[in-house]
Amino acid sequence: MGFAVEFDAGNKVLRVTLEGVITDPILAEAHSAAARYVASLGPCRGIIDLSQVTKFEVSSELIRKQAAGPSPWPAGYMRILVAPKDSLYGMARMMQILCEDTRPELRVVRTAQEAQDLLGVELPQFVAIS
Image 1 (cartoon, rainbow, N blue to C red):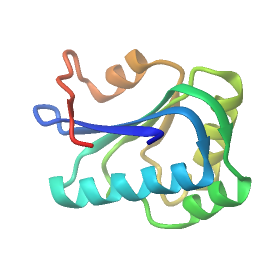
Image 2: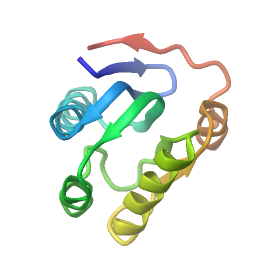
Image 3: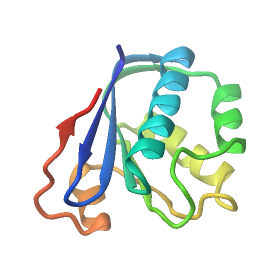
Image 4: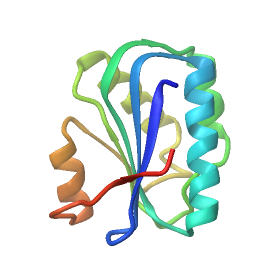
């Protein structure tokens, strides 16, 4: 599938983990899935984890389109991109810069631990929902 979706109900955090080779269709579907789950679960914070990505074949056009479009997460709810590799970190920062006016709650970090620290989550209990 290219991604997995999990939810930590106690901390109200939705995590989308992208895996393997990520292409435009996979990223677009992950974005849509996040929007569906946030709509059904209610407002929550988010982690988009790129740690398991082996190749990122996503066009800059799609990044710009997603940055200009609506976020799956409502305003006021922090979402964090975890990007340990330099190339992914650069793409994540590009996304952050493109949408800094409309999504000020978006952060980019290198590790899952940094994401948990920013969210104040000590013992996450993620359960697969997709």
